[in-house]
Length: 109
Length: 117
Image 1: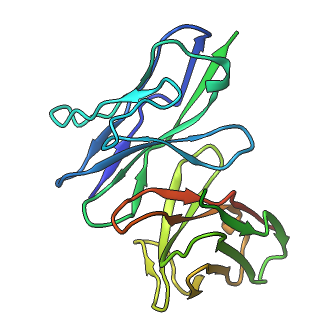
Image 2 (image 1 turned 90 degrees about the horizontal axis):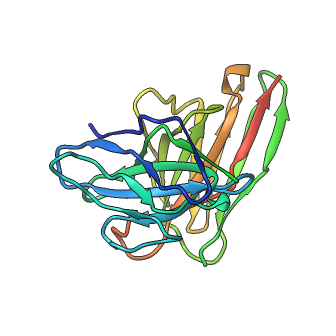
């Protein structure tokens, strides 16, 4: 079975401060990890995926297989980063995504 | 870019009636679509995988006779909530895989909010 855990339901930071969203997963095989974001009144959209190893909107995430984690980080949060963030996992050979519980990020001015 | 459209965006119905929600891929073909359910302030829960031209694959605990899925074309999947009850009230979201097989990148619809009175 595959499972994704996001321990923080809410993260509140000031503009310009670093932000880190934690994500831990459980999967017996080789997973693909994703971060999806949902801005207010918008649909869920892909933020980044671990195999791309890219930075999107200043966010980065590194897959740590030893710790089974895929934490999302941004060194300087902006107000427009306020949104709901979901970590998701896809097992090998399929597109089925398992989502974590989500973390709401609130960036205060 | 790839767009997934859902209709209706919200619907209110009486208990005991059936409601159909459509999910369309607007500028690409989707052999596989996914239906999720989201309760308030909770995460997305996968209900079923919709396969074009074949039966849907339901997740454990999801009643296939309650949530009928039809994927008759490469651009349309429908979810019908049969004999709806207030506990079926929820936000239903569909998604489709974009890109080459195994790409695992999903594009999501805007969701359909169902309220059963």
